[in-house]
Image 1 (cartoon, rainbow, N blue to C red):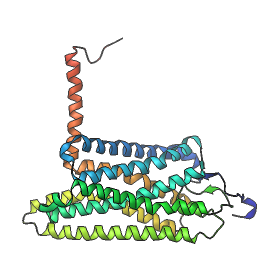
Image 2 (cartoon, helix red, strand yellow):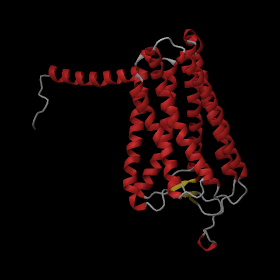
Image 3 (tube, rainbow, N blue to C red):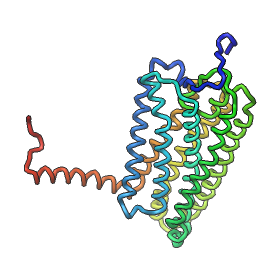
Length: 332
């Protein structure tokens, strides 16, 4: 950008989110799938929470971890999409500096938490398959509480430096963020200072946290596969595959788009800006939508309880109408 076209600011109180440049005329149409994804995510994850809470037989470590994942997905979805829709529908692009840093913190905090939850899920499946007799003694409710607090503390502490460092810089260039939400690098690039600390910290967290988590998950599933291959019958192997299939699907739905988004943002400088922004938006919206669908369809206990609640509500509704001796449709 040339000097004549650059507006200079000294620590602006608000930023302007650029959203998806070049597609302004299609914002209403783009908002439809975005809104649909968020609606499915909210309804699906709240359904998971409701079913696990109301069904005593699901009060087990695996389903507690699933509830933690659902809460994390809800935070990721609701912390980004409302502002996106405000831009699409009302052209409301301004965001307060403090609100921007808060959004940045929640995004990175719960992304780290989700990665930690996947490690805990892999550990749960490892113990359940490789050492089933000790599963109930190793993964107790008390250990789940400590695991959840550890994941929350790790995510909170890891993400705390993002807004802390971003607040230290002086912003004297443009206040336009070329993104749909307050992405860390997109924000600190607006600073007129040496932002290598922020850049290196973000890169280190992404590589170390994701690298270690993927390593532990991979080791767990290698051991799980070895245990599966040693099972005596084909039916037992298929049943165990089905148990782990939903976990593997959810893990892939989280890490593959995340890795692709990270690599294109860091190294794909020749890719068009709208592609960067659109894919970053999809990365935060698609996994929270897919997680409850995958678990709802592939986890028999959740699927059975969901069907039971649906049919039970229908039967109760018909019973109330019959007892009240009132017709289903009544004019006037």
